[in-house]
Image 1 (cartoon, rainbow, N blue to C red):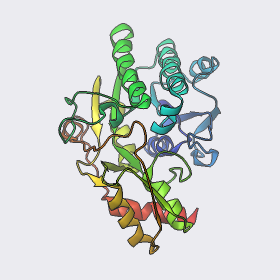
Image 2 (image 1 turned 90 degrees about the vertical axis):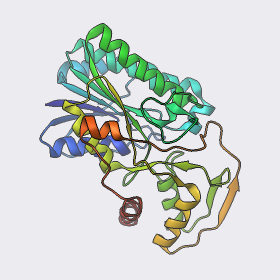
Image 3 (image 1 turned 180 degrees about the vertical axis):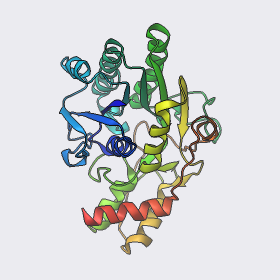
Image 4 (image 1 turned 90 degrees about the horizontal axis):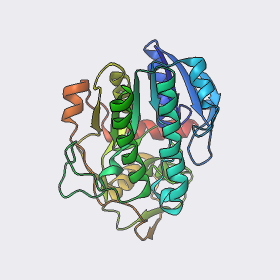
Length: 307
């Protein structure tokens, strides 16, 4: 089938595009290669078509008209909690106005489905763990707010226009191609510092936890969602909590470098803990995470060493 992957030159989107192509689908990547977004031309699969464009661009309609996608995998986003706290207007312009441009053009050109990269940030700090699809959403950052708003737009477009969707609420995705110089993705940032023998900044007390899920497992969930889980919001994680301090110690052992630690205060919008029960994704998609955290971190370290 013909698929547009927005953000397909970025970290997560490029792995998804690779998996779609591997499965025999025709892929068109739309990405603006924004410096803070992690999109890189070299991430684009050579078997994909590439359009250098922002999702807010009015010309996006022309791309949709030419491609006439059956499915849109929407992974273009302002994805940094820190940037969203500093510039909520930018966050809303990309994650809501840009997304509305994508949805409107999907309807106009007859797409049957949108697969949406949502986020565990929509939940904020929950009253109890693990989080599942029934957990109340109380986002604590503009990023979490805009991602939650995107879910509501999906419901509206399905009810109003019949556009089907699957929304995947990701835990903390990590792996090869993640930007080690960005403001999101503690594992890749730490790896960059470890390999360059720099100091590591740990915010808060380092005991805040996240559910880290490997990017290739996420790509598999996106493949399964092409023909399943219509109208569903699904948590995608590992049901395991890992602290920032544990990540630091693991990378110290993997790299053999004892990086000096710089302590810093809590960042605005940072939630305390996250852990996702993904039983519904297993039941509906047939998806379970396959990669252990230590194995995924080792693979990511090797990728950055070679890069």
